[in-house]
Image (cartoon, rainbow, N blue to C red):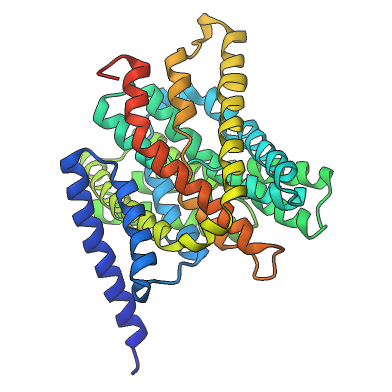
Length: 402
């Protein structure tokens, strides 16, 4: 009957929302990372109640859910902490992503015999970190704000760089990208996206300063989040990077030049609510997208991939970030060793990795295997690292029982 598809979508959304609310309440009661609970619930539904399965499209994650999530995190970012950690975030989000992707590609390629181009696609997909479970744990434990900003800032920017690297990797598989083109394309995309986000954020901030209506100003912020993402995508740039910069600009410059206290309270409340709802939905969808059968068939390359991700993370955190910190010396704020341990174990993968895996073309070589490896790595980090990051944080900071 006409409208039945729409009704089914609303029905499914209502079921997901109800499940997310119940799981969030249970997780909070027992101190369990609710994002992990959501993923496990989604996995269970996909495995045991396939009739309730729902087709997860990459557009749903990358275009509908992700812009609002990255905008909210960027808007709430403390600019003072960002100034102090900006260098570390830049290292993690640009060379860190490239190192991680390269290590995964080399290890999987040589260990399993998978073509290096295909292995690099996997590396690009799993180079984006997802801090939601980690940040929730940090807030519960009272972790230093600068460390929280470093973890969240890394994810905000490396989501964007990972998507750019993924696009280049896909072009390489099709033989359409040379090394020179890849370097030039990566650099220009990142720089142009940074500038675009700054411009849209500046314009929105000036408009908000002239309006004295919190409802209109809240609407403008929503327009800024999705409008910046869509505009960047139309210009073939990074929607994530542009949206992050737009959010930071509104949250700092916009607040400073004339945003009323009532508007600030409204924006904080609305965006916190949206972030909670969208986070719950996105992790449920991650669980629904992963099929246990595919994971079993690809268990060997998944195991190599997990090892490669951990090796790459260690090189980035202890070698790159820690090494630069030692060269700069204590006067430039060398990271404490305990922080490095936390940063190493906080490199969870999540929604962006799953969305990129789902976006692979239907005729992509060994598509099922490549997707399964990405899903398996994501699942390991969410469960193994997500459930133990609290223990690692307490032990590294000495704030509680190990």
